[in-house]
Image 1 (cartoon, rainbow, N blue to C red):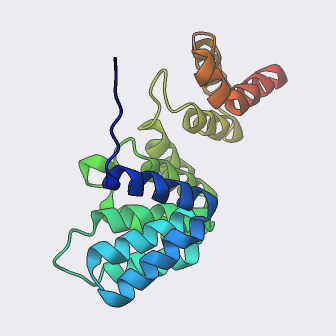
Image 2 (cartoon, helix red, strand yellow):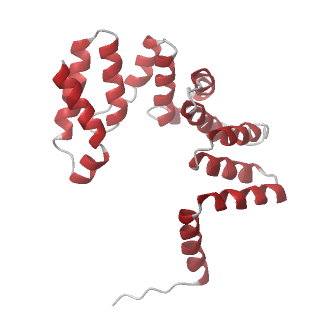
Image 3 (cartoon, rainbow, N blue to C red):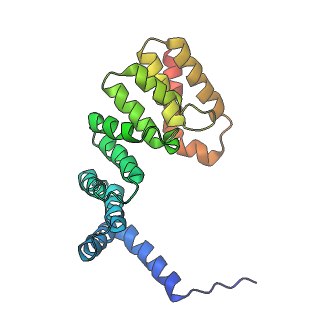
Length: 199
């Protein structure tokens, strides 16, 4: 027989989760007050993350940039988040600028930031550099949406056979997906099949 014992801390965590789900801006307001009380790197990053989660990318960027002024802290996380935030705002030049500051870090390879970097390069017409970055993310049985974008890049640059081969791989892999994964990647799979039927 299992017994569940909730202490006050557990109750508070559950209550906070429910409150944040119902009113996501409450967490942001609380973090703003916390930052006013104590302007620390951790508080500023927490506030920036909250803005990012609420899709307030302009405020997120402002706080991530402000956190970079703290030279004692490692700026890698803030730079990662700036790449993602600028990409969401379609500011590809800034996406590239911040990605280039962290691209030598081992954590960059295969990351969402590397994907955004590759896509930003594509958007500014640097297709060879974009292809190099996107190829780093091309791994079987993962990164389906990212690999679809690489296939589209191949098709857009008249490398139909290479693009079709990648689309065929994704399509074949999708046949072996679990049902939950098929639901998650449904739109990607549909787009892959649509592109294949048009070739």
